[in-house]
Length: 276
Image 1 (cartoon, helix red, strand yellow):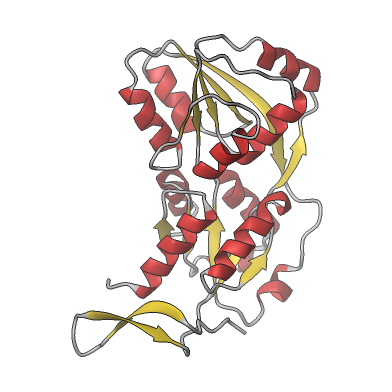
Image 2 (spheres, rainbow, N blue to C red):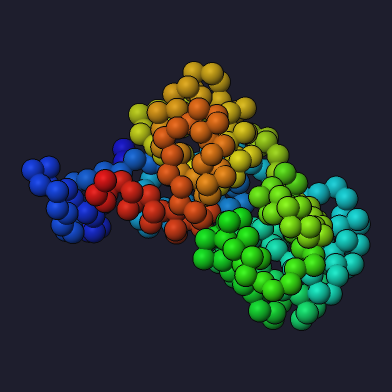
């Protein structure tokens, strides 16, 4: 059963005219959100979407684990150049980097960028440096900051393997030295709820916050389940993820330009309730 938006403000269209009015409704029901985020990031996502009136169906498509080469990562972090640009690509990148090197003091000569405001909030627990957060909270936003900088000698990505290819390509294209330290890894979940049982009788939108999410989702579903998914709205965190969804045959998409649950929920609510 989908949640009723009792007391929520929604934009309702009068089919006879092309104007919209804001009013409180108590009868409209929203489709659920298939929450594909890792379990370690699920609670904030669930709480946020519930706040905006969405039911959530938890189906993690990624499991976050520590890397095996902790000593190597420790050495790489301690040897980051004093005047590089450091980009933390996620909350997990911050958490795992400071688990590996709790005493890490980032030089004041470094420029620090985070992909997302929540990543910045996590990073502020560990450093006092200025943190730059792009308006577009994805790789495109980071690149915009990089383009505005006067001189760029090197970039260090604190990330996981197989991520942020757009930033990597930008560095290569502009002859910028790029280092990437993978401080955590993403793998298929070891256990998951039966998909048909979870989604039975529910209309839902699919949360896609990374390309790996979509790759793993296809692996976790059988052919029929995947084909059925093609009729669902894919709520993506970036244009790159949206393009990849299209390549996979998932053509019904919404790009929110952020992996922040609050921005994704607000963009989705606006999309399904606002004028077309």
